[in-house]
Image (tube, rainbow over all chains, first blue to last red; front, side, top):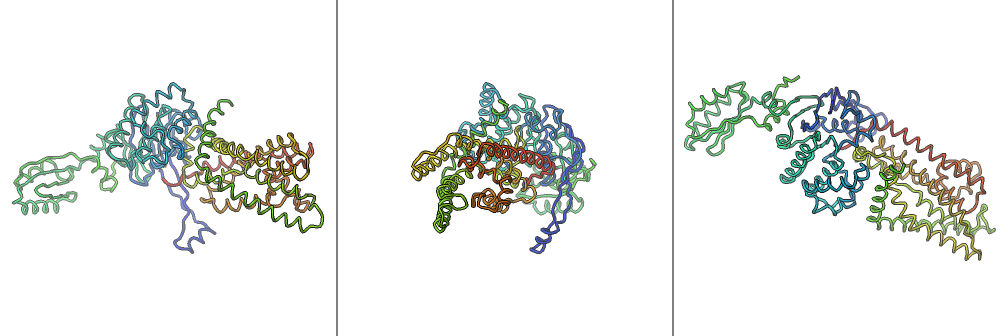
Amino acid sequence: MIHVENLKKDFKKTLKDPGLKGSLTSLIKPKHEIITAVDDISFTVEEGEIMGFIGPNGAGKSTVMKMLTGILTPTSGTCLINGKNPQEDRKKYVKEIGVVFGQRTQLWWDLPLTETYTVLKEIYQVPDKQFKKRMDFLNEVLELQSFITSPVRTLSLGQRMRADIAASMLHSPKVLFLDEPTIGLDVVVKDNIRKAITKINQEEQTTVILTTHDLSDIEELCSRIVMIDKGKNVFDGDLKKLKVDFGQSRKLDFEFDLREIESVTKYCETMKEKYNELSYKIQNNKVGIQFNSDEVTVKEMIQTTLSNVNIRDMVMKDSDIEEIIRRIYGKEVSLNEE
Amino acid sequence: MRNSLKIYKPFTLTGIQEFMIYKANFLFFIGGEILFCFITFFVWKAVFNSSSSDSFMGFTMTNMVVYLFMTYLSSILTSSDAAYAIGEEIVSGSIAMRLIKPVNYDVSFLFQEIGNKIIITSIMLIPVIFGIEVYKFIVSGEIQFQWIHFLTYFLSIMLGYIISFYFNICFGFLAFYLKNLWGANMLKESIIRFLSGAIIPIAFLPQTMGNILNLMPFASLTYTPVMIYMGTYNISETIFFLGLQVFWIIVFFGLSKLIWSAAIKKLCVQGG
């Protein structure tokens, strides 16, 4: 469905020295620097797949999305979506895709929301009957009814985002590009939006690519993850693989008798000194120890803890995705993928 | 063709609706223009009063009044906000939202603004023309209105608007390099006011300069239609100047496409 091969994008950036003098020099004799925002990225997405596209701020996610949607032209490399090159016949291509940029809106700012949908209906030439059916469906999953006659500029962020997502789905696109569709939204709205995306994906086999910083989006929606950093591919696979590849991080939680707090603290300290990647947190009578299972095995950890501390209750936790990603972003994990 | 009209029709309708929302804005704009128009009127009145003969450079005071108010009407009808609007979209990066729609970038703008123009034309055209004709009737004592001049004027105004639109599109693309168009826009407006004869009739300028300006695109915006309305041109001249307008449309249309295809490759969307 989507084939991206060796995609690369360079930007030319004008350099300016600080201060007024710098401004003047750059006005007369500008210095340029080439910045590679996206560097040799390749991936494929199958039809009906929901792919989570993640990476820290400035990793190049949005740039890739803009190339995939035909807004930007790649410096080199190709992307083929549904057999079409986005840059070649833009008008024909964008008919088959739906796009949401969470930070912008495609709605007509000054007009009632319904007007935007009427315009879109004509632009995409959606037949009356299908349009009605579609609107009913979108109304149902995104609950637009209560504000559909209000001017767009009066909508709250959550309402606007739902309206924007509805606008991108109106013409039943084959591929949906969602760039941070849940940015700045509360839990309930996020949930609605996730439901809508899942429903569309299941009922129509819509392929979805979404970028997000909210990892619960990823956990609930995505069967597949591509992670990039500094314009380079860092990880490609499903959630399970991510946990296996980078998930050596484990967490041991246990409760103890408050009277023994001194010996528990002492034990934790000695463990911390012994192992590089171990950290702990004590709260009341609860302790959480985070450790790397490559450095100290789970079995060993449990054994030493049991023999050193008098514990009441204990839980061994798998690494959660947030922890893994924090570590990857923070470059704690060696990127053995490359 | 009919199909594409159907696609762009909603742009015109929303253009009309958007216009309605900002009525006050428009009223202030018209008020300012009327003020400017009367100031120019009094300046020229002083010029005519101090002249010993009835006419000045071949214009009588009546001609001058008709000229001033017709120019005022025409420059409003042919003006285009495209440069500003495009500049804004490029600078803020919201141009991306237009690019993800299966429509032509320029045509969607054009039809949106036509929505605007339909309203302005229906509000202003008849009253101003009527006022001018009443004035001419009072001064001369006879009805001088001619349908043929009016209709050709209307045709010429529409051509003038399209030139203005595509010229502004080209100009708006400067935003790719300048990143902010406000200053450049001010400069452009003043230059156009002068070159299009809105401040001083081109006929008053030295002949060679006048001839050159007449052939330039800016005269095609307002000066040509006004001259047609005033009946200054004979048939062959009228046809020549209408042809010239079509020529400039083709030039600016082509130029805008050229710049666009070059710029789109270099486009970098600003802000996220």
